[in-house]
Length: 206
View 1 (cartoon, rainbow, N blue to C red):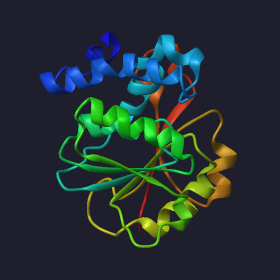
View 2 (cartoon, helix red, strand yellow; view 1 turned 30 degrees about the vertical axis):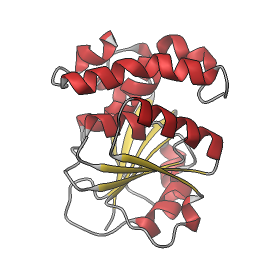
View 3 (cartoon, one colour; view 1 turned 120 degrees about the horizontal axis):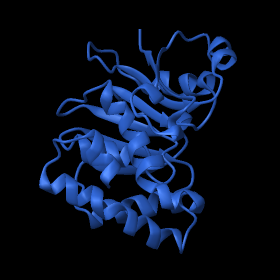
């Protein structure tokens, strides 16, 4: 938790309690279901929570906004973002239901009221629209944008579009996507070596 409070100083006591409970809860669930990589558990807050919160350094989600986490898996980045923005609504979508059940259990355990889940593929969502889609290392940008665009609603909010966390050399991937995303180097935001060659991308919905 120290690495989180090193970079973020304005959490409420309730948020600190929610964040502080996460490692123990994920460790317990990981013994039953392989929710996240076991080799990452020693650096849980750095590799999963802080990485997810990189989004908050560039974007602020407002009360009432609706955010979809595409391919949420074990709950990242959506669950930490839901803690950070308690007035914003988050829907975590994944095709693997057992991981979403863990997310639901953890959200209930920490009293997170602004998060729900949906067992579905993004391309099968027909009747919902969102202000923003977030995703972490799920698929190439071309595919992420293809899945995200139909579920986005056009508006004037600063985060209206696709926000994703990615790593490695992205030049070919960005070219093939046909998108022109804004790109931030996370290692310039968080100084830990883990964030070298990790990036935050934003493709606006135009």
